[in-house]
Image (cartoon, rainbow, N blue to C red; front, side, top):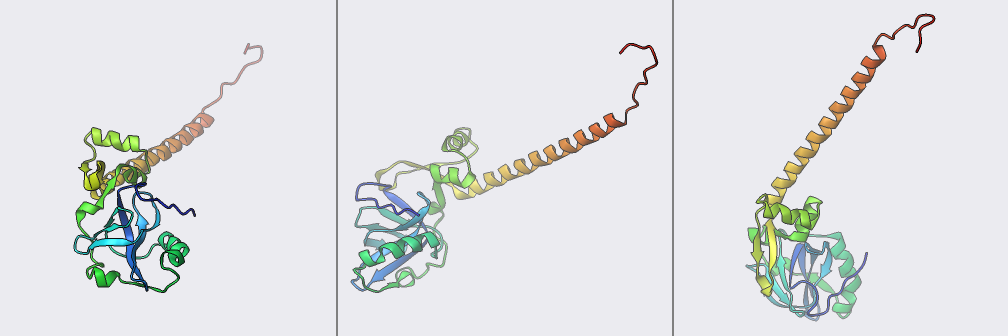
Length: 208
């Protein structure tokens, strides 16, 4: 697994973090730990400088905004990254999980707004290309909105709509598979019928 470090000013301005927690070291510094929905990898933030527990949003020393999505929790990729950098960011000191202290309702799913996915994340969710997702939006098959948080313009698609469309894709795939199986069975029957057809008997002296 690779570790990606984004210096201030690089990388996304807003990070949507799933399976998140907040870790505090003996030196008083706090960090977000979780799974990035955008980059699909484990992430440890720079030091938290502002935190709005009710909104589940914080700003870090890098200037990025972190949105805490869904329930807090554990992610193996995030723990791997944290294990690699804990000694560095914590100065070798011990740490503790302060998630429940800072966000008492951390076990309750957050607002629906943070459940919207970016174009890239939506493509990964459906297992298709970003171009295909964009065409679905243009054709009115998927709703979307423009997120201007942090000064950017990111198109986002509701996860609920993506789940519905993914189920439609699966239904079509199952139907297509069933049709292929039926076609194969019919082909087998046709082969059997051809084999059972009476063969013409040639008489002596008859040309082929």
